[in-house]
Image 1 (cartoon, rainbow, N blue to C red):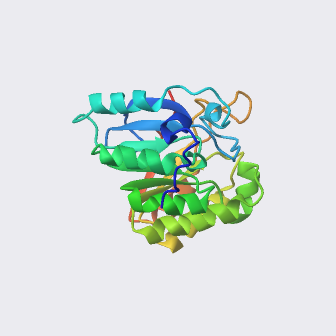
Image 2: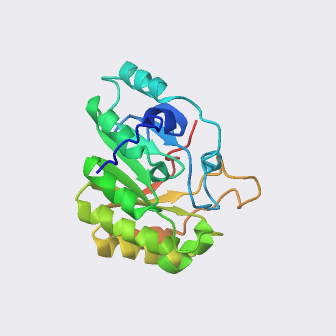
Image 3: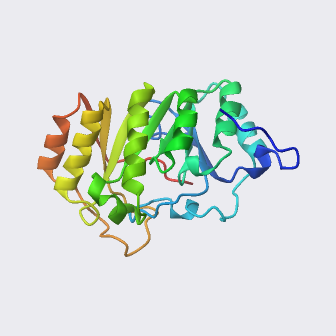
Length: 247
């Protein structure tokens, strides 16, 4: 699963690009208090992104890996797992090594991903205890939301990998009327339902972290849309709390 280390290359601990650490994340893994590790980099530019400062791989690192492990050790017994988020955590090729290190330290591991890199996601899925998968739109609307050609195909492939893996998961879709129509949102939910997703969350847009003026600062999902989505899943949630907001 993991590539052979080049003896002339710096160890992965020196190469992983860390964007932040949250010692007490309440909404990043449903039902658990966790620590969240944020990695730098994302190939997509979603207009409602609440962590735009983590999109660039060239952004300054917030901390080093030894700091992360020291903080996790201090939290032992107080947290129910560790979540890797971003950005898009699979953008960092050191993610498999980091997951392995956290598991070796005795922590359950979760991941937030939009599925931008299906091959890399496939490589880490067997090492995960849970994944939060971020749908962006229906297939036809992906490019408009992410600003990236081909993103719909990548996300669709990744979504199938998540469900077929058997890893505990939730599919999430963020609602904003300027980014997504009700029909497109319902199509995305139907896609998750047809795949066999066990849990689905419609996330209400929150303005924290979003560039000023990018979107209207409030956007409540239509009640009819919420009701229609709820009929598709045994486990459905309308979420108003921010999930994965980098400190």
